[in-house]
Image 1 (cartoon, rainbow, N blue to C red):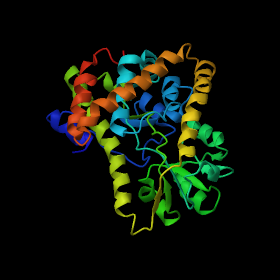
Image 2 (spheres, rainbow, N blue to C red):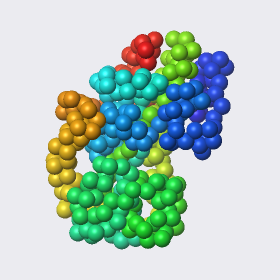
Image 3 (cartoon, rainbow, N blue to C red):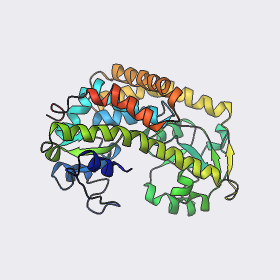
Image 4 (cartoon, one colour):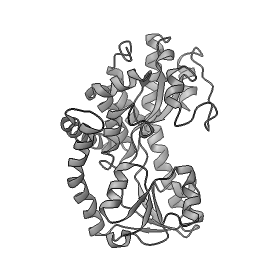
Length: 331
């Protein structure tokens, strides 16, 4: 059952919302302003669009190569936000928001028309990247990062303006990339997780009772895991169609895998410098270390139950979201 339907059922019809999709009233780049001003009550925010407004969220984005099981990444980011990152909560409050956790895409792969499993094949290649972190890795291996929106990706690829894209496998189907490309190198280059899929306007939050706020929080735990699982299912659907679409999958060479390990070692210093100079976070290293520890922790917690979405959602609720003081949140 979708999030809004569950909320309505759990509130005995007291909480009803109308869904506007496809940017009908707000889009990615005006969502924060719209929620702050009460144009919408709930929306989803890609924090990468707002580096100045959400410096802590963009620190998270700069560490997106860590972790590759989307529900575990989602749980780790959500715990980090609520229990370990006071700056995150202050950023949300300052921008008129209450963010009910973070979700994650599935892992990014290299999609193109050539076998890209060897690091040498990437030199000089124009690769569409989903963010600054991945652009730095592309430069690290000698490629040329190209910034283009997901909606423009297909056309740029088909016209030869880019040679490859970095996307989850499911994008072959969801963005019709399998019409113009057929080779996937499974490098598992992190996931996108700087993403408030259930972001509530503080104006709306202020009108809700304690019980109503808990209903939103409880259903957010289900929705966060469900969204992450949805990306994994998208990957599975592509695999099921692989023979029909003549798709080829390649494992990364040892050199390509080593390029990621080497990059993470060298990039840490740059992330720290950017956090201090660009995002004005005085002491980012403890936050970074906590984030890495939480990702490892939740991968371990979810490993025995990784096939049971409700069990994972209940664990996230029990261990994180149920412990949040909803009457103090956003105040």
